[in-house]
Length: 413
Image (cartoon, rainbow, N blue to C red; front, side, top):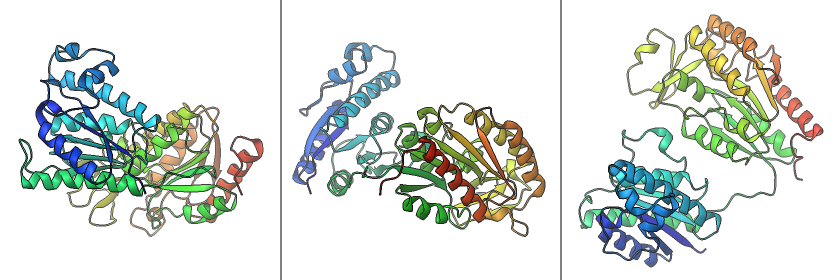
């Protein structure tokens, strides 16, 4: 298996020694290297393949204008724009098979934009002094980004930082060598869900859709999974989606850190992808189980799923807000849209006798959701729980009808 070419990105003005070492390691591992200089302070001591002047030009400006833009933040933001544009073009041309970036806070900030310009499945590794730091907002992290802490290497090479840099090189080379590109022999359906103990419809839907000739990808809606789903949906990679777990949207509106960002439930609508939508798990707001219950959720029923994540029921007013926001986002869709509304519950722990059962809250949500369904969106109301067989039957009925109408491409045998 060949490695191909790795795009190595860093500031040659401050990190020439490190970038030179990383290029040597990548080449020793069998990779070709394109070194991009995104520095603006001075000329580096390492030979580069893509000069900082080219990066500035790709941003629609000049290096001198970048330097004179005001401060280092504005300068590096412009360089990030140019670097991202070049990376996207190189990948589209088949000239790079992976990304390796190096940085402190400045280089890391820039690297996030470059990684975001590359599609899911293209290996991306960032060696950073702030890897996995709380400084990093979740929405900046590309869902398939690998981060390696650059320990002890802020200024100059030493044995400790050489170890970190070489691990980053090995990570991207290994990923590029081993990566299998997605197949496109069958139309792809994207489904969102939580763990099978909470939402179980995919157990029925996945084999049923595969029997119809579709490939099925199920996304775990715990933040990064929803971001990956949205990115693919907006890019038009799905022939249809069954977006049945909207907890990330509920989390976002409830102020939780477990969010896929403000764009949740918009990607399929923007791309015109046919979307079946249901309000799975919108009755609860997640929080880190290793922290105290947030003040906004104090007094609400809590379910601790494991040592990482716990959930509290949301109050009726928040559920009404969530229903209205679902309706607003569905109203912006440019393709076929159907809302499945199970009136007897939206996740396993809200059934009678379970820890998150809240009949008043469910009733408030259902009433608000009925009112919020926008014109042009079909609503199929079900006297069933989302985990009941009747829910899957209804979903497949709508899907099959869309296939018969030619709204969804037929599956491949």
